[in-house]
Length: 423
Image 1: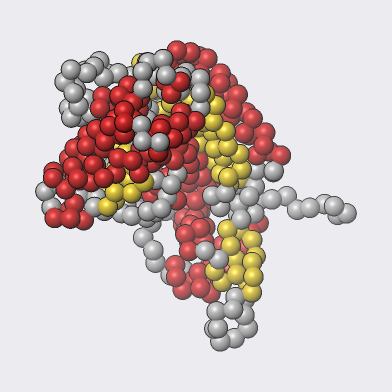
Image 2: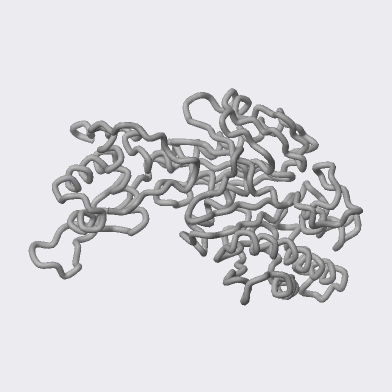
């Protein structure tokens, strides 16, 4: 039988398991197996999970009643006997919502249980200038629009997860310190709940942690057991997956790599300290080096990807200032990433956000710096990979975490009402 190890959180409380608890666990086991392994016959599910065939048949019937799985094609695997039907993940009737608020935008993404996008939106928003109340108004607006799209498709939300670039007290959803957006002790959970309503569970989490979860669950290096994810935003954070588990730290505050003292001691970070790593690798540092203050690439009212596309166009055109700024960035990024490789010995270092968009321009100086500073041979076995999730990593991770509640306990989704006669 497969060993289920939760990626997110600190594990479950151990308690005696009654019959209902065992059944919920087995329902989740079958549902996860179909998600991870793809369509399967009942016999193959039994073989691969270690459950007996009668139990699997009963579990499959209940999951179908809850419209979480559906019958697929005939199993043509070549086994002896009458071929059976494959069953596959359905779950189009439930969805998870990921939300991200960052320095200059608010984004939302809705995924169904199969990981397919139901709704998606990102809008420019100067979070620091507009403050918590107006930002939460905007978050509630974009969430409301996304939920309306989901409802039109018959999908009911099972959770909302909000990604924030800073320290978060997840137990009560308070943003304790997010220097790049100027928030201190903001009760985000309570504020959003008051605007969205009590009908859907809401969770607040650090953006880098959620991005790392998204990469582990659905990125190009999915299921890599030891992985470091670096956000490429105004602030720089790290999400760490160690032996298949999110490394949260004693207080849940691990991953604040952007504030390691690896930057320019003459530069003041958004946190108020000098010499933080993000003073030389954050988006603000790149823009400052690549363009004058009145240049349109500094305009927070423009979509971030449009501004990055402008920088890429200048680099392609051979603009010396842009290319020099990207080269210095790559060297500084390699310096800090070498520390992370020496500390955690990951298989993969994933570059997200703007790092992924512009990585082709600074990868060479970054790798050169890594080869100089990583202790083990061949970068200690690590590979540097550009994320394909781009700026959707945090919202995808948020939607994934919201949906995990269903995989933990499929009975959260009620049994579907039978269709009335004549419909």
